[in-house]
Image (cartoon, rainbow, N blue to C red):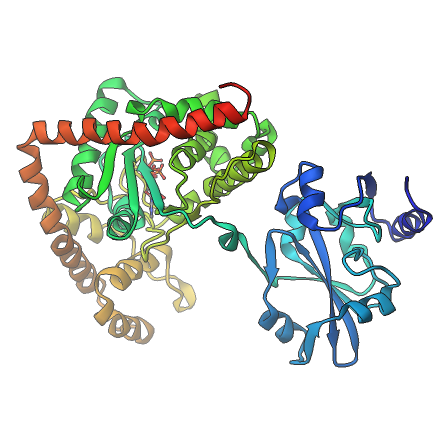
Length: 484
Ligand code: AQP
C-alpha cells in the first residue's frame, strides 16, 4: 500500500514538474535488493547522498553504478569542509529514516545532479519509504529548485569486477593487421600474456557482420594468426585460435540475446556508424555483434580485455549482459573492463577519423616496407591552419611522435610553436622509427610463413583448449536457464 507520506511527496514532485511513477515492492532497505527485485541494473538506479558542509547541507544525486569523486565535489562547492551527514543529522533534516533518502530534499541548500544520471531516460530512486521506490524521468530532474548538473562521478564498475585471472581479445579478419590494431590491441595482448591466462582469437564469425568474400576471409584469418605469432603471442602462454572453431561462442550469444532488448542494440553508436558505412548490409548479424562479443569474453569469464578505445561501447554491453545473467540466473560472470594501451586510439593517416582496415589510405600495415611507410607518413596532410592551431593531420603526426619518438617530442613541439618545424623532417623521423619498431616482427613473420604446419597446429590445439573452458560455461548457463 502506498503510504500518505509517499502520496504527499508525489504531489510535491508534480508541482515541481517532475514526471514519475510509484513502484511498490516488499520492505527492502538495500539498494541492491530493490534493484534485484525490480529486475533492474545498477545503471537504472540512483541514490541521493546528503553531505554536511560548513554552513548547512547539500545533496548529491548519483547513479548506482558510479561513485562520487569527493575531491571534485570539494572543488565545486569551494570548500574543504565536507563530510557525509550522520544518520542522526539526516533524520533531523529530512524527517526520514536513514537509507530512505528522496531525490528531492527541500531542506538542503543545493542539490548537485551528476551528469551520468541524465544519460538514462529514467532512474529508480528513493521515495522516503522502504516499500516503494519512484521511477523519475531524468530530464525533469533539472527542475529541482537550487539544483545544478555537474560532472563528479566515476564508474565504480571496476570495484565489482570479479578477481578473474583471464583475459580475452580478438580481431576481425577484415584485412591485414595495421598499426592501430597493433598498438591498440596486440601490444596489450602481448603484455598480459606474461601475467594472466590469456585467450586470443581471430574473431572470424564477427567478420561476416559486414560485407565479406569467403576466399578473402579464409586468407585473412590465417594472416592474422601469423601476425599474432610474429608479434610475440606465444601458444605456450596463450590460447591462440579462430573463433568459428569454438562454436560454443555462437551458442552462448543466442542465450545472451534473450536478456538484451533490440532498442538497446539499435542505439549503440557503433551500430549506427556501421549502417552508415554499409547501408545495404543492415543485418541481424550486425545488430548481434556486441552480444557475440559479450559471449566471446564471458565464455572464458574474462575480466580484462585488451582492445582499443573504440570498443568501449561494446564492453559496456558485455558488462550489462554479465549483470543481467548474474541477477536473473545466478551466474558468476565478471564485469569485464578494458585494458588500455598507450596507443588506444591511432588516428587515420588521412587526418580524419581512426586508422581502419576498411578505409583505404588510412592505415600502415604491419607488413609495409620502410619505403611504403615513408611514403604513407609523408602523405599525412600537414598544411597549417589559421591561428597556429594544429590541423588534424599534424595532430596525427604528433601522436606518432609521442609513441615512437618520445625523447624528441618536446623539441618538435617547441619547433611547432615557434613556426620552425620542418614537416618533412618529423615525417621521415617518425617513418624511420615505425619501420625500426616493426622490423623484428616482419622478420619473425617471414620465418612463420615458411612453417604452415606449425600455424595449423597452433590453431587446432588452441581450439581444443578453448573448447574445454567454453563448453563448461555453456553447460552452466544452460542448466541455470532451465535448458540443460
Ligand atoms: N585506429 C585504432 N587505434 C587503436 N586501436 C584500434 N583498433 C582498431 N582500430 C584501431 C583495435 O584493434 C582491435 C581489432 O579491431 P577489429 O578488427 O576487431 O575491429 P575494427 O575496429 O573494426 O578494426 P578496423 O581496423 O577499424 O577494421 P574495419 O575497418 O574492418 O572495421 C580492436 O581492439 C580495436 O579496438
